[in-house]
Length: 236
Image (cartoon, rainbow, N blue to C red; front, top):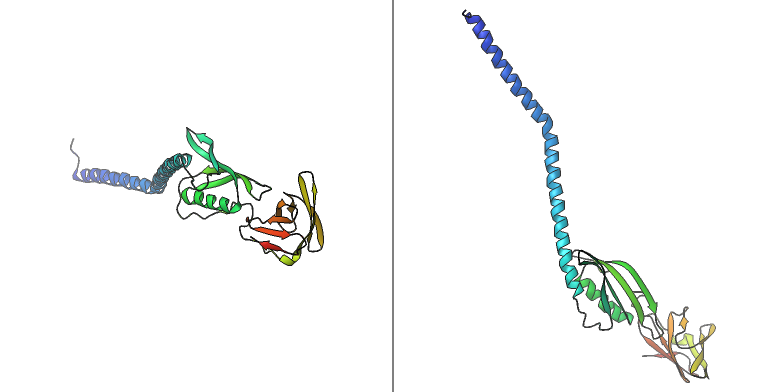
């Protein structure tokens, strides 16, 4: 049975409209999903970048950690450095300890910060009778970073405090056995002191006491000498 020309035209028109509708719906669906697909792709790229950066940071940290473990600080033979903690045989925490003047500590710490990127984890300072500082500092090792700011990890200011000669007077000394004590007058107060005494009000340590003089030591290592029966001190 033959279709009439009218039915043939209708049939062709039906299939043409149906195919166009499918294509149109498909394009609508792609347009609807595109932002989500695009975001997902961008997230994958971002994740890949973060993973690459983390791997690269760990690689650089490993290189610096190995260098730090073998570091030599020739100007600070008084200091000892050691590995505190490791991860997969790679140092992650590093420490340094020793006893020296605050000026020598400053030189060493600046040298360390110039060469390595570290984050201070713990610090212990103890002032000794001779004016030196016993220090133990431990750091976390980080990947190298440019334009790092220097930190002040010192226990006291490096600048010298003002010393007024007229504020001091050595009044007398007294020896008992092997120990010598001295009577000092500082401003309106008197103090019996001996080697190692800490004068908190003045911020000075008594470095030594003899029969005719007392040597005072500032935080930065500067010495002031007080002579018996003489008001004030002489600066070394």
